[in-house]
Each structure stands twice: as C-alpha cells, then as structure tokens.
Length: 277
Figure 1 (cartoon, helix red, strand yellow):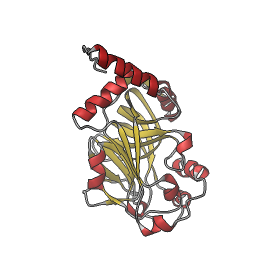
Figure 2 (cartoon, rainbow, N blue to C red; figure 1 turned 180 degrees about the vertical axis):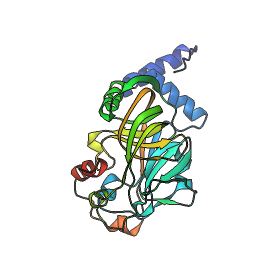
Figure 3 (tube, helix red, strand yellow; figure 1 turned 90 degrees about the vertical axis):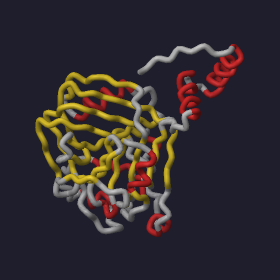
Figure 4 (cartoon, rainbow, N blue to C red; figure 1 turned 90 degrees about the horizontal axis):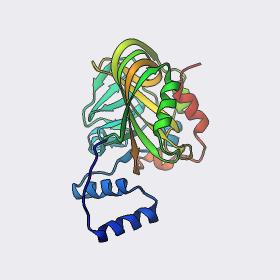
C-alpha cells in the first residue's frame, strides 16, 4: 500500500484522534474516507441487487440493468434473468458464462436478478506460492481478513493447474435454487491463466448474501469461466479489500414484493453453491 506522510494542525490532529477513539476506527481509514469525499469517490462500497434468500426461493426476474450495475464498481459477480448462467465482472467488463460452457461479453441492457459489485482498489496484495485446493485458498485469505464481522472483496490472478466450475441453466421463475443447482453443468480446466473475483461475507448476513467465500472464475482469453468449485495453482496473486459500506438495492418486481422470504436459506445455499454429489 502507498504510504502518506503529512503535517496537520494541532487542532485538526486532536479532532482526528477524538473521532478515531469515539468511532473505534483507525486514523488511516478516516483519512481515506475524507480524501474519498474530497475527490468524490466511493468508500469501498459493496453494492448488491436483491438478496440470497430471494434467489433461493426462485426469484429470477431481472431487476437491474447491467449498465446501471456497472456504475457502482468494476469487480463483481452474480447471475442473469431466469438464472441464465454466471456473471463475472473483471476490470469493469461484464461477462456471462452460459450453461454450455461458452462465454460472452454482456451488453448494458441485460437484466440481473442478483449481483454484487464494488470498486476494487485492494488494501493488501500477497503471493500464495502454493495453492493445493480451494480450502487452502480460503485459509490463506483468512489470515488476511481482520474481522469475521465485515465484508471483503477478493481477487486472485495467476496460472491455475486445475479449475473446476459450474454454470447455471436457464430456469423457470419460481423453481427453487437448490432444485436448479441439482442439474448444473460442471466444467474442468487445466493449465490456464485467469482471474478469480468474489467476496467473503459474515455468517450473520446469510439472509442477504452467501456466507463465507463466494468466487467466480474467468480465463484471461475470456473463453472459460463460471462459479468456482475447486482450484489449484502456484504463485497466485491474492488481493483483498475491506468493505466499509454495504448497500442493498431491493427489487420492486412483483415476484419479489409478493414472495415469502421468511425461511432461513443457509442449508439450501450451502447445497446449491457446492459441487453436485
């Protein structure tokens, strides 16, 4: 991370220290937020369309245009109307991984029922010399997280010895996610370079987001991708960003407004997000 050294007045320094003590925020975060306000930049805001519970219950009607979504960031993931494939947003470009394994760049007028995006300027970057599997990747990111109660955006770049993904099929509105996931096509790739994008969410937020790690993959040649099920690689570059704000845009669609969203989605999410047994 770049290092900033500056001289401030004693009065301003006292105000800064008092605010840091009162809010229990590090001085560096307060300064970053103040600079972001001055330059009219977002403060590492996680912007989300709809909720995980709605997706579990089969709410697949498009709620937000991709063009509007991209105004809120440059790194993200999600799905498309009627659960038609996997969304991967890398460097501001949005891609759709279809159930036949093909990948296409998405136009701004395409709709999404569920997506998460942020403006990514990593807080920390490290090299993972050996990643034996997805569990090892998660354990290493665990050492970079400073709290189990905050949200984090993640990015991994490098050459992967092995990647296993899935892509959802187009699904009729109202079919539960766990039922749709039971027939998801899975894909295996070897020795290809690419990027993982995703998020870590705390357990308490499970009705809104997928708890724990949620990652999507896109190859550098934009020919392969999907929801990550497994991976293995050497000398991978890991980047992490702590999110300071969490904004959820609730759909105004008829199916969302009338849905019963009281059920705990945790078990169905765990089953739907994993590989087929």
